[in-house]
Length: 348
Image 1 (cartoon, rainbow, N blue to C red):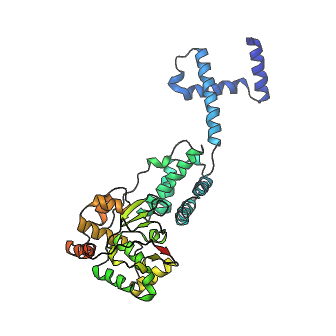
Image 2 (tube, helix red, strand yellow):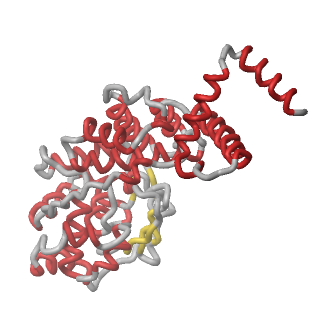
């Protein structure tokens, strides 16, 4: 196509778009000014090539920006993608997402256009009154953007540039020797005897209540004297082996996990005199505190607790109990007349 034909075609196009030559020239000038130094000193042919490249990439960028969803849809779809998680985990996810979506204007924000400032504003308004909630909310918001990147709804994760707030862990107060004795004595009552094994696993093996509740009949190896916490049983999704200490305290007829576990566990605590202010992991905290004070091996304790490192143990469990009390707590593990139980746990 010669120059005359090109000019004629361009004129027809401008007429069809209802643009004048002046409008076209102004657009070219504005584009050149935006390019700045990139356009300086170029020959007409080179400048035209740069303008064409700018036009192509601009069209692609606009198309990419339109390929996104709202923050609300991304959050909901992110939760749906975790259908394999436990009901309690998904319940927590929904709770935190609802709090973020209640922030004015947050739900309708296009995910691709959300900035670090937007994300920080959402977190502060939704969870600003609690550092712990803020940390967890940030983690969930980060995961939403990570999911959005996999779906190509967004190109980067703006939450990465938000500092994770540090939370100073409070040292915990473990159960006293007298309190552990009351719990154990309560299991001698016929109405609470079914919880004897469960209490033992929490006090002397450090299992979480939910882990005991999910325990399978094949998870306790009485010959090797250890408990296997399967990945689908553990809170964090990582399996671990835990020594079955003080196993001589267990009788064969008491080794089973009952149905209606949550109700039975609550009734046992009440029978032992604990009616209020019971922390869900009190027995696990007690195990860790007495373990740290007596065995003095945080590396082993970390493995038995299923922690990533020893930082939480150092922050919460060191010096929580005296060495004397710890020795009394664990002296049962040196009982010479221990009896190995060969039968597996049975579920009734």
